[in-house]
Amino acid sequence: MQPATHKKIVFGALGCGGLLAVFTVVSFLSVRKWGFETPQSQLPVAPLQAAAALDSLSEYDLAALTAPLVTDSLLPAAPPVAAMVARWNREGHVILSFGDTFPPDSWQGRLWRTAGAAVVIESLPAGAGAPPADSQPVGHALLAAVRSALDVDDWDAARQTATLAIRRARELQGRPDLLAVIAGIRLERDAALMISGDSLLAGSEAFRVRAAATLVTLDRRLHALRRVRALIGAAGASPRGVPTLAEWARDASLPLATRDEMIRAIGFGWMLDPPEMSFGLDTARVATLQGLATGDLPPELRQTVKAVTLGRPGVAQRFNLSISYRTKRLESLDL
Image (cartoon, one colour):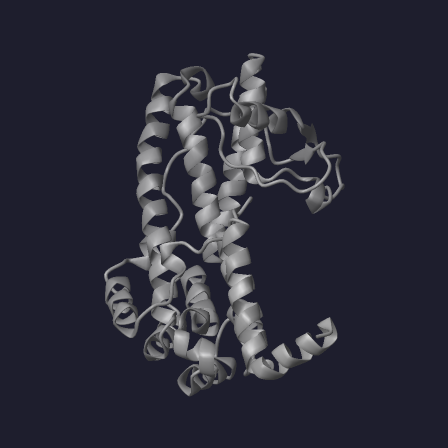
């Protein structure tokens, strides 16, 4: 039998549906082989789990969790940083994890110090704008630069760079995006960890103790907000939870960042719901998104509603969107 004839028989027997199923299985196996295996929090969510997530969410004080910390400066008065800017002398994009706790001679420690050595802190000329975004270091690179300055006993440069990192962390915490808020808390938490562990960087024992106390608060807040984000995602995975999330998303007394995350869970939650993945978006979810689109929401949230409204994607499109969505949620947020 000729190879071409054999292929025709196989394709004819399977049909389009069979071939799609084969491609789906192969894609899932490939995803696992390449290291994108989905963690437990990304598995399909049952309606009972979604209901439990809603109950748990109601116990959190969301406004308190995202409110700015009422705390004095973590560092003594340093040279003015308002007109200072950080620039990164390196090529390409890099995801940098906090590496200050690794031994200096480990590959993680060397990577941390290499990233820090590439950061340059300089004065911004009068009237000049900030440098291009791709030339500015990611948040944790600023902390790596603090370590590089400490290694050469340049305490003023270390404190100034740490102050810039904390300023960036608090700017992130003010954004209407829960992921950015979490990234900002994580960055400030890591800065507090460095300050609390080094009296010379802190400048005095009083500042070191203050940083240690702030570290405890930020640790608790970071854990709670990560849990809140997971619960919002679980609640949005079932069409039954969508109306309640939409009601909360309209509540002006709640923080914009959590309302934004609720809208995202409504728009993308079907990717964790097996029936919707198989047969298409539930009518309740579609109707809720349409209601949000015509509702009275702040401009930031209206933009989010627009971004998560995907209409009624077909089978292949649903599969591709699901893989992309889950992969992006696994990526590190290098802010």
